[in-house]
Image (cartoon, rainbow, N blue to C red; front, side, top):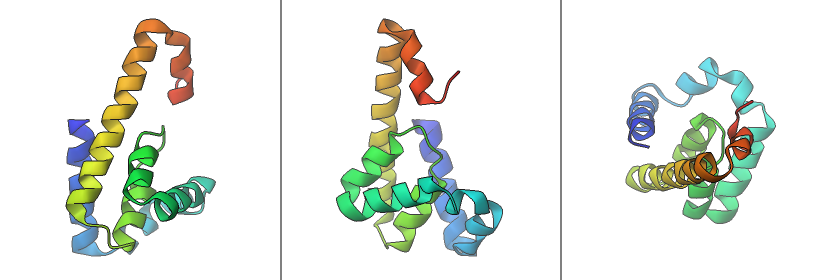
Length: 110
């Protein structure tokens, strides 16, 4: 989860430095996907809890970060929520690996 947070902080810095177009121009398919709508719906409906739950999902974090920044979410809150979500995700994955390895396919594996 710590590595993810370092990446999140770096991405937030780049967006703050270069604007939101910096991300949308580099990853246009992400922002035209159903994942973008799913992320937007969760964050709008559930706020910080939506960020935690979305970051626990097996998806890339770019839409979540960008949408949260566009919604003017506090940066510390955003980073904290993503950290909690990733700890939750990795805890579930670790439990699956120990007790039911075949369940890992639901986290993007084969």
